[in-house]
Structures are given as structure tokens and as C-alpha cells.
Image (cartoon, rainbow, N blue to C red; front, top):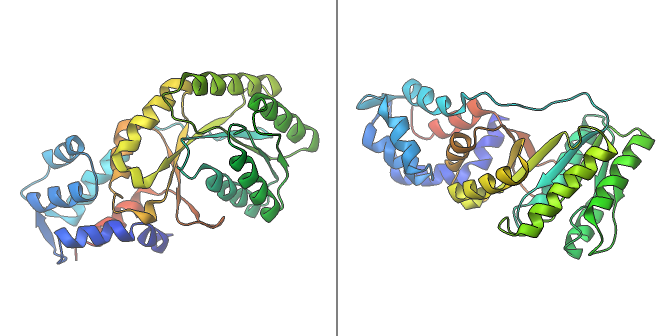
Length: 288
């Protein structure tokens, strides 16, 4: 797991090396500030993290400061309900469909049964892409034609899961820009229909955030949260960016669980997020 974080944060750590090329036992406050800003921690949070630190900072002090960002009360929304219904939300290009395949693979590897719902009926490509993953992973899918009612897909997927005794339902949703009113209304309707099909569903609404967007993805997350209420986050594409510090900004601003980090393009490339491993991977580049 720890080595996987090293892989994911490779570009972030390369950027840190440019600011702090030599690892030391302690660093100055100014050096720590430069490192945090370089890795895309937003300025207000950087100032807050530095507040309680001395002029010379040790690894333990740096760790305690960074880990404090994750000390909020998060509702992980786990449930023994079967089927456990998850709705996957996010803008186009964030890696939604690929992440659904990773989640499905993750559950299948644990010995759980999974069914997919191709609820992004706005884009034909989304239906095709999810259907390809369904074939590749040998996981059933409920899909319809482009332009059909996505709420019907939600209902049919949950009904099928109930009838056949599946453990997990994972439903894709359209990823048009969050500023569009019609998307908001569509998502709300899908949630209402899910609850009609199975009381309490969807049990978890997961937001996919593109790691390459850095701290700017926070506004996106806030908009979706106001729209329908988000239960947790999966961050994708962190391995392709030097903005790995944005995870701290996302945690600080949103105060919600970060469930997983995407580590590549393959179904197996998904790891549970561990705050300790994340922080230690960064600090390994700074301190002896």
C-alpha cells in the first residue's frame, strides 16, 4: 500500500524535490510553506498549518500538523443492506466510468456480486464504455439507448439486483457541468426513484474528483454537495499531476470521507485512501 502511494504521488514528490532538493532532519517554516504551496495546498490552509509550528520544523511536527487536517468526524456510510446501492457522480472527464469498473472489480475480488446501471444516458459513449467494462469483467449491466430516461435504468437495475440477490449496485450518472439546472433535477429524480425501488437507496453517493484539477475541484464538489448531498469522494489521476497536496485542501474544505484513490487505468488500480500513508509518502521526500 505504502509503495502504491509513492507511485501515485511520484510527480508531486518530484515537484517537492525542486523546492527542497536535500532531505534534512529539520526544515525552516519558509521551506515548509514553499513545499506545501508547490504541491497545490491552498494558501489559506498553508497559513493555518504553519500557525502552530516553530521556526525549525521536525518530521514529527510536520506530520502532526498535516494529519490534523483529517481529524474531522466523517460518516463512512457503510451498511449491511443488500443490495448496497451506490450512485457515482462527477463531471465528464473526471474518470467516472473507469472508476466504476475499478469499484466493481474491487467488490468482485472480495467475493461479492455486482450489477452495473448505465445511468448516463446523455452520452452514447458512456453507455458503450461501461458495457465494454461489463463484458471485460464479466459483470452484468442494465443499459438502455442514448436519450432514454436514466431514472428507469436506476429502477430496473435495483429491481434486478433484488430479484437475483446481488450484493452491490453501482449506478453511473450523467456528467454534464454542475451549473446546469437540468442535471440537478435529473440527479434528484434518480435519487427519488432509487428510494422507491429500495427504501434508503442510494446508500452512498460517491463524487469522482479529477486530481489533475487540484484545489479547483473543490468548487465542483461543493456544487454537487449542495445539489444532492455527497457521502464520499474518490480522487482519480493523482499519478498524472504534481498537485498531490490538493488532497489536504479537499479534506479541509469538504470534511467528508475520501474513500479511494485511483492509481492508474486498470480495474485493479484503486486503493483505499489512508491519511497516514499519504502524509508519510510526502514527508519521506523532505526529511531524513
